[in-house]
Image 1 (cartoon, rainbow, N blue to C red):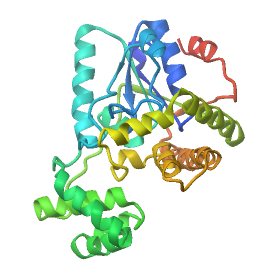
Image 2 (image 1 turned 90 degrees about the horizontal axis):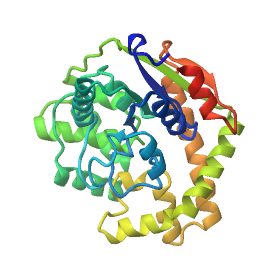
Image 3 (image 1 turned 60 degrees about the vertical axis):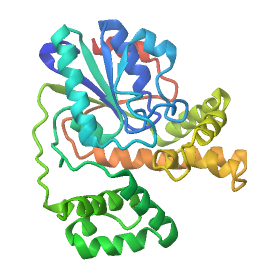
Length: 304
């Protein structure tokens, strides 16, 4: 099933389903590399909380498209698409087999060449100003401003989706044109075979609980402290992602250790639900059920 003639294998699914583990097993069997399609693993220094592949996993299967930028550096999906397609061309030119593994829908489909994005870059100072304004006045205030300059995008974007609100306002400020006026072309995904991992909710909860405990044991708190001491403030968007946000709140005395762990599991489950809602739109995905304690080696062999 992983032969070149049948298309490049893409392993996708919700957080905590075991995508990395299965990907490493498959790659080690075929002698291939892995392209990561994860919106958080692109950041350097953020290893434990993003569940990056371990040193052992990287030795078994070389990984690409991780550790691309620092948490305070702008990096859009369009940037990821460009870097990713260049890496694909490089691997194909060298005759190295590869598979794609990830759970970030836009990053996955962009890597497969499914979307073209507007090439408007980011302005760090403008973005910081908008983020500061959001902290002072709330996301609803910025959403109201977006309604005035880009009502189409305002309808598409929820008033709590601060990241997308800021991006839309950023595009307006930089170009004088609404984000909705840019053309997003979607192409049919060809040459890829999509395999989705599906986990029953209670099994996923148990897997996420174990993963969260392992993250804390591996030094998640120390990782967050090191980032903060390194000048990466808590208001940076990557630092507001699941795992980092809760630890920061714990360090500030707003949460106990037990509460932080519980929130990480709860928010991860909510995130997994949103991921599955997105993926269910694509009828081409072949789904396989993953038990609470799977044998990924056996599953990988069944795919070869």
